[in-house]
Length: 397
Image (cartoon, rainbow, N blue to C red; front, side):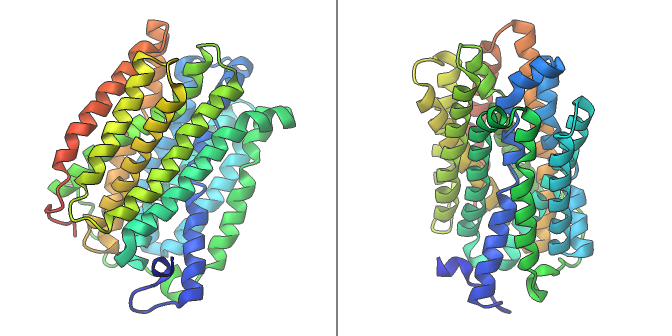
């Protein structure tokens, strides 16, 4: 653990390093719960607001779309104002968005979700660059740390959404509760301010690496991975509610999916520091995800908790490795920020369509079989794609 907290030249010291690690973890913990808290509540939203499958998918699509479209803006904000101030702005947007979308009807829900997506986009685009700058020698371990924070909060969001709504009497209050940990994380992040870490700017900014072949390899990988993750997160509860599960029990399934991501999200990136070729980690992750998605597609009632565990293991480790590659394929912190911007813009923009086309296909076919078969095909394609993720690829500058 001490090695995680150690800094390269210009060290802030062990105490400041520990505080900065906690601050990164606190920010990361708010990058998934605002997304996973909604799917278990979709039946309540459909009943109260009269949403169709497409409309319900659109609600889960918006934050992911923002995470893609606004990733370059996050990189530019980090360059202009420093990573610390830009992430502070992101956390303020998160708090405001969660309070707004819980304040009223459909319009407030959509507008608040847009603000939440903007906050996630800015912070998510800058965290890999922060890791590259501050934890270059332990990038895999540190990526696992904040991946674990994201996964744990995602699991808690899914698990507690329905019980809190029942306890407080409304889905709006269940959503609003998550503004509190975001506010606390903002205070922790501000407390970690330090001259050499809080305001460091990558210089020069440079152009986004749209023409770099290595960038396109990571773009394609993250597009496949993120489409599967966000579509699964959006529709796992509804899939099993349609099979007679209660909304609370279906939320537990989503919690298993999210929690198991935390295990491989921490473990797999940590192992990446010890291997020369990380495709030995990517391939098993792709296999686990395909097996779990295949189980839901072909035999959903046979071993549902096993399917959720396999999907969580596969997608959690796969996304954690994607974050590692955003660091490993970059020459320095500035290059990592630029690579992250284009990767998130491309992959999240495509992934945001996943919950919508899934809902549209469900409406068109009258069931969940066809959408899950499409997800299985995507999982198999990702498994084949792993071959392209060679460690010998030229790094982005």
